[in-house]
Length: 336
Image (cartoon, rainbow, N blue to C red; front, side, top):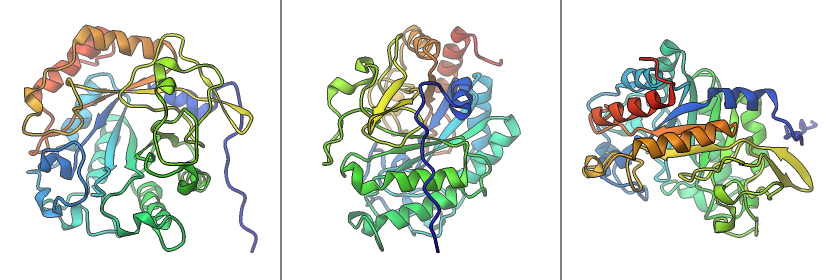
């Protein structure tokens, strides 16, 4: 039986329809929540017990309502961070909400809240998995099939339309080990509109582990720079800002591709993705500086997400909400 050819990107110096739709979304919320929230860490190695994850409730309505009030048009939810703990009803692993102190399918709860508020849903998924035993086995019978099963669960329609897939953690393996062309094909067959971004997108692929050089930070991008993590539909390198004349054309295999940028911002100083017992001691970002970075990014035809981590009660921090609204009102985007 002949296998269908892989769905591939079409070289272009102009944005396609789905890229235009992404750029029109402009402003979104990043939601970092998971077992790390209960371990008081930003990253963990898969050793935090699943039972330690025990939020009082999943207040997805509050999360998405806040995004709507702030004038945001989409949210990106962590589904699995580097620790490998899964926030959805998965059949692939016992390191998930199904075996935790709260069995709520968080992806489902957020998906339903997004429908109520007319907000689009994006998902973050870590390629790196520090708890899955097959991780060191890339191909048949190894991690790639495991990863494809998980992504199929997330994208097969049970959670509705998914407009963005934010992929993280490719830096400890070479690009060739990820079989990114097959991953891209899988996603596009399940969700044709879904825009795929892989962190540390731009740079030189030495076909060995390691991240891009400082030369390829977003403020240093140049027209025609090489794509390290390809295929992708847009560029990522969190939490760095872009510049006003951010270029959009990048190259792979001698072809040019149009690639918008998504800027990610922590709501507080430092490396502040997940809530922890010291999170509220960290000062919030300067409002005017944040507003200026957002304006530069949006005026350059790019998009911005601001991270808002729920606490151990499953609630956004009230001071984070007020800080976000101050930013969004200064941008003229708030709905209240």
